[in-house]
Length: 229
Length: 83
Image: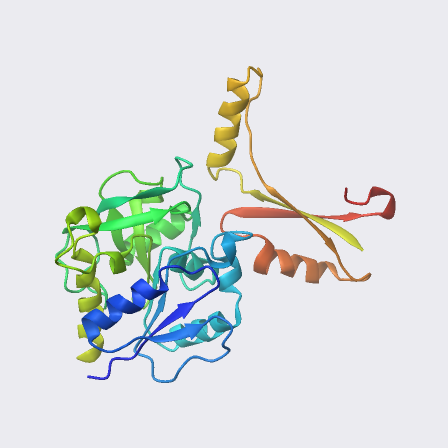
């Protein structure tokens, strides 16, 4: 079916392999691995993924340095031309720092790194990434972050709500995020940033405490949407 | 030219780090601390004649995140070199 996904690796990314494995497991096609110093992206990409980790050691602010790296100029241009982009955890931080998504991810309100599997409420079921979910459905997906406290002005939050761009909310208090936001979409619905790690929840064989398989459905959604487009 | 950039959270943005440090100061027995806000200081040595526009642009594009932070630019004279 020729599904072409690219996974970008920054210095300090550590979920890039997991992301590539998840994409390959669901699509049957190996994901292209892209290095941050590359100036150009491979052509004809169906999907770009920005993985979790600690790019550039979280220097200055989480995601700030990666957002200014050469490859991100190409990612921003690709996203603006309609290439779907999935940013997970540090990838979400890079997306906000690059301006592809609004708001910012601040230090967790409890000050501590939070690493556990949490309930996620599905809010949007129309995007490429979420159309296979039921409205209000509760997924269980692992989180692991220190800076996941989503912040935006009230007017931006109202706009996100009004345009149906909140993809997921936490089903329990996690990190102090405004309006319990765990993931948001771009205005055209083709860029998704989320703190939880769907790529860590792709194996039906995995015990729920090891992530479960709810994350796999997100990859099934987006790959099916793009392959059948 | 030595330039000092002060980056701090905008008023109204919750500062969990500052709050934790505030509690720690209270725990050490210091009284009368009403609030603690933590920011970042960036010292730079830039070419003489670097324009204010260029310095502002550096802050807006990279050094501060304008969603949550404000910045102030202080030009230091030679007697007041950064420590």
